[in-house]
Image 1 (cartoon, one colour):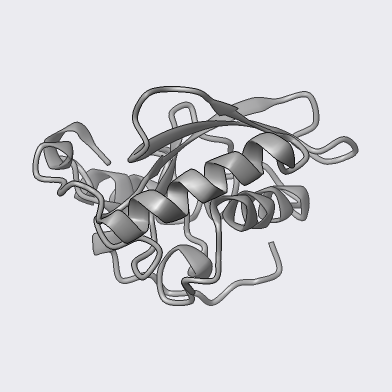
Image 2: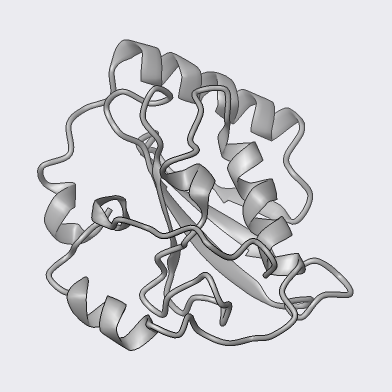
Length: 161
């Protein structure tokens, strides 16, 4: 979450806490390849290091994801953004917002942080060009003042990148 919306964030429900603790233990035992959870004392915000997959445009590059969990996770999707500088990708805006359907309309409570990470790495790995979305400048301008990507009405039209 952005700093302005972090203050209004509600505490995690008991269900969310239990689920996240379970996911964290699973992560420690079997982390997804190419990812490293940066340990903090904040269960509600995870910082995850992303390493670009070998043989892709992003190999030998490292980025950070910030995952903010809502009060009713997993019934509600977490907010997932790249901490700037975000990778140059047709579905990743320069402010770190990610246009990926599973983070919004296609979210399912069966998904986990690990499955989100694998989907993001797959999206990066399949890219054939390092470029920003065509509407990057306008979108980023409209997101000033801490607007969450979850407030965006995304148009999921391109699954070829």
